[in-house]
Length: 365
Ligand code: SAM
Ligand code: SF4
Ligand code: SF4
Image 1 (cartoon, rainbow, N blue to C red):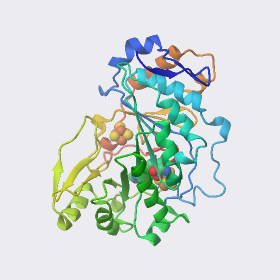
Image 2: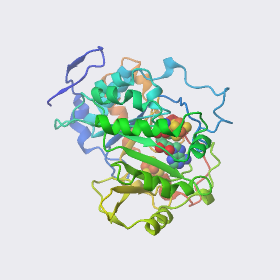
Image 3: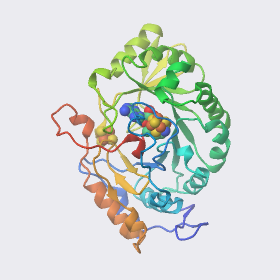
Image 4: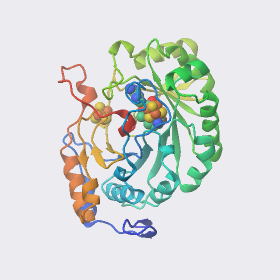
């Protein structure tokens, strides 16, 4: 193995130390549906400065809500230790998320450590972040310097009043737009912009958003509203399907589909025929993609989650805070992944028993 990875027992960078079990068995790791492990999404905080109505409704996440106390969060060293092991087992992409990841203090230090990771064949790990961008204009350069490759920004409306209503915050939409431009300027590009579309709530923003981002070099993606968590009162009647969104856009612009770039790509992509860019559609509800889902999630307090709609996690923090060796942690991770049969979205509507689900603000998108 070339390159250097983080030695979790110290606070400095050390030569690569490869857990032997992982190196030996990780490459062929498959879950119950023969899906490899390729992506790790790390939620670094359950806190957020927004109260998006579909994610952290203020009635539930108000002043009395108990967020995780700091000692319960994984430290950067603990996160890097898990990530190091996961990379040896096939992870090629890491995405930092939350809550709002830019609220986690010194997040650039974590990025710097993660950017040292190398896959078993010596490739750098792709490092991305999903953010609401309120702090992005001020932090973009530091994130880039630390080794972040790309950002995805969540933005559900361009209209100021609508944005304020949807995010339930006092932040001006211009601040988010400035964050997007700054990210592109420092090279965190291409910037992806995610818009969750809800019927009767922000579907009138589809065309203005497309028009605004067309020609700016950023990739806008429209996302079907999902039944994540238990707090948003999701209702199928509020979902505008990807097909309906494309229909609206095709009415306004000349567009054509683009072939997928890589295995597991979640967005169906389209391009504007006039060459002014692309947009994507993420059809998690109307046309789910569980068969290609290679994502594992790590919660802020150190639990593995195997699906966005999972009701339980698998603790790894107690191992990290014990005398467990890397190989023992690797064995735990492999056992968890091998047992994975999750495909919630494919089974949606087939009378699945109602269940408590993890909140999106806890586990990240
Ligand atoms: N705070 C960051 C942000 O908003 O970008 C990162 C965490 S947020 C939970 C990640 C993504 O989940 C956002 O793009 C958000 O729009 C999406 N999301 C949250 N609830 C959703 C829902 N019910 N349906 C679809 N997407 C949702
Ligand atoms: Fe915060 Fe992101 Fe959830 Fe909005 S979607 S409340 S910005 S975590
Ligand atoms: Fe992956 Fe679960 Fe979403 Fe299916 S429902 S794509 S398994 S996260």
